[in-house]
Length: 320
Ligand SMILES: [Zn+2]
Image (tube, rainbow, N blue to C red):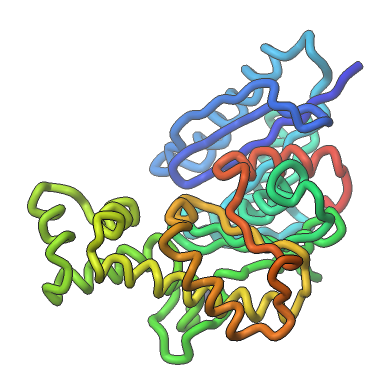
């Protein structure tokens, strides 16, 4: 009988569940809001109900091999417990894997959301022709994942790949991780919004002032629109985010010498505005970056990378 895995992307805003077969074909997908303000037990129950609905619909198509779940945060891999999560407040030390397994009586694989996105991208996306890659996801924070020879590199405690916390600015702003000058404080969507608010407060960006007057909120999307319309301070905000990405990439290229570096997450949509500065900085700072053979590319699967990667964890079956 054919098998399928369920991949779950448990975000702070959206909860998405997909059934994927061993070839990577998407069989079914369900999306619902994550009611993060409800108790964590309620969120888990709604997730399990969605998985059950999906499995019932696919009862004739194959057998459920297991469930892979990508969660934002740091995980104790041995116990499947969430140690810390910026997007799921109150979930600290919650045994997510055990809770899901006790409801669904199916094996569950749990990993960090950026790690599973990197795995998905290697399996079916920009990295499908390479065995190893590194991925940065630009969202509220900056996530990171390293895949070596087709497997997530987790480090000895399971916490490797926190590439958003590579230090790129010696005296930079404080980071939610407790550090200072992390990549996340310069190149995330939140960093773009912070810099836009600074430009607005200093009266440097009339285009943003106009947007706010018209009732628009300052988001990375609205800053992108203003930049696209030619606003110089907004264009500089993206160039700056790109330069810091280039600094981080130069260190990654020098340390890892991987064939591919993938940039994903919502803010990667601004590729045309930040990539030129990113690549200039990378060329300037990494003496082993071989343009033409070392690739730096935008994510191909975008928001679905994590769903595929979570399902892939099940088919790989080890390292739980
Ligand atoms: Zn940090």
